[in-house]
Length: 414
Image 1 (tube, rainbow, N blue to C red):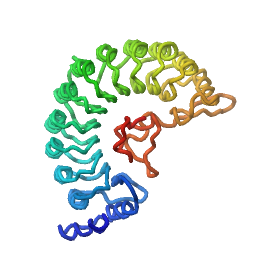
Image 2: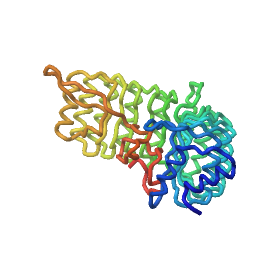
Image 3: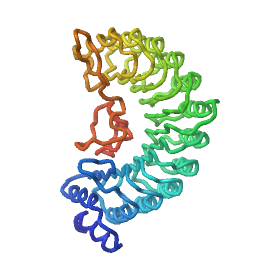
Image 4: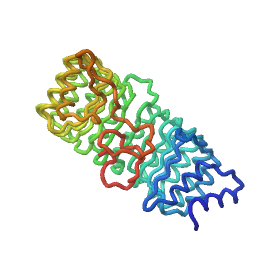
């Protein structure tokens, strides 16, 4: 068989394709690894600059990996892969029995490429993670992936955020997940919804009442209001499996935060709650603080940047964190960081109750006054993978991020 570098050169020679020096370098480095291999051929690497992969590069790479048993994860984000390249990868998935994770984030794949991948996954029994983020799959592509979930019982994590889902697509996923208990995490953020009836929230509420496998749900940028949150909370009272609820960038106000606080008082399952870029204000923050301090012992991470929260709400959350034994991560940047709030969070960090890597602010002093500087947020490594390797800290990654342990028995976030 030879090394992967040798096989790649042989395939390129056989198909009369030019050798991509970036692919050659990554394969050479992988040949020196032992155990399970993660191939990161990301087109956004800048040190050094790389030659982005094209469909021809994917064809040669697929031929190289066809009978390979060592590569478990393949990260091809930010390249120039189109539908033809997706079809080459679909052919690879039909023959390779070792690949567990595939990321095609931010390429140029459309409906035909998604359909090819969906069809090959009807019979695939090895792939556990598929990430299609940022590809304009449209109605046809996303619906074929939803239909695939009716037949595939292996896939555990699916990311179709920013893929131009429409209302029917989102409802389709909700219907499929009512009977598919194998999916542990799904990201359906930023669909193209034009209705104000909140049909998608209604269908997801119905799904959450019966689904017993989903642990992570991303519904960012759905235009969801307090009414939609109320429907979700009603369903989640009986749900004991969902751990991570992402409602960022919606239209949730203080009443929605009150409903979530009521849920936290009753539900011991949710451990990570993302409300970034909503408008819960001081009153909503106070409701959450009361629930966290008096009634909830399971929430571990709360993200509330850019929610028009002032000193009153932020101080109440800081006090709640002093009392809570479970909450370890909190993100607050983008709110009204007045001096009382700055002092409260600086005190939490100085005392060791809140570690700096577990929040998005860092305290500093100027002329005797305490201020907060921005650090990083909850989804720190969602759009990129650091060159030193993925961090496994509980709340600095989305669990849909490609990591080096694709067969972990626990949710990848934790």
